[in-house]
Length: 430
Image (cartoon, rainbow, N blue to C red):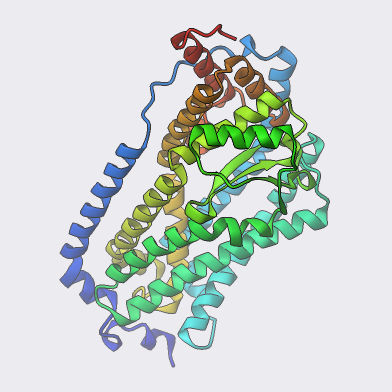
């Protein structure tokens, strides 16, 4: 069948043009309701702490440490910024030009196969363009002693990450095109599906996706494990076990995290962290217990799910002008996979600064929780220094980097928070 004829709006009663005319007001009301609900949940669940001003990093870090952190940032910033910009440029071309439609118009087969193949094709094109930048970045990590991978392991991890992204994106794009082909008010099931997919992905991520990249084992019996479990019990956080990830096969960086919720909630410690002094490990796990105690993963999942639902409705609202610019008749056209992919990417970039702002406050609350639980600000400061110098953290990022990429307070900010906590609680300041 001729592609232009198949994309003709007169051939498909469920296409977006009449739906947009007839149901645009309904979608606008739904978007306003979802947006208001999203803002309310963010405002209610985010701990809007007044963070103390960060001190001069030179107070806590030597000139050699400051110089090393600055030199590392200068080494990894070019490939990182170029990869970021390339992804943004590619998404813009898919949304604002017919590039995606022309590429996907060459595909043949059933509409659903063309959608899936189109997502894969566009992802491969972008990743091929970004691959040299990834190699450049990895070389820098090795030069600075942060990467322990060989090229085979690095390639395998990167391909697995791309594969997970392709699967999740394909499900989303296929669902939107399928719904647009069958329903005038396709934004309703799309919003419901986006909400459900986000919740499901967050719940199953620890058991389905994390094992693709790391092996996990229970922390061995001993004083540290007993201390951590006792601390969790004292904190009132139900934790069956603390897992250790074999991160050392990939990196020398130190980290721990909490993921999942309900039956899949887990606290994970990098094996690289086990050599640190016990009080510092306890503080890091206490920080993660703070996330669990305040249900940060559940709150973040709810915010993400509402954002995804609102995004589906916004996609309907933008589908008319976006389709015209991208050279497709409607979102029911399989060639619309390109504009959908571009819009999702741009939405992630545009929402990034707001997500980082919320994340920094959530992380600060977890720091306060760790200090309340351990009452050890001196160990907290020592731990922050160890993390910053080992991970070569940027100790004084510029405003742009802080807004675009700062999901955590800087080490000087966290140290200032510990000193403020000590003053308020009558504990000697570190």
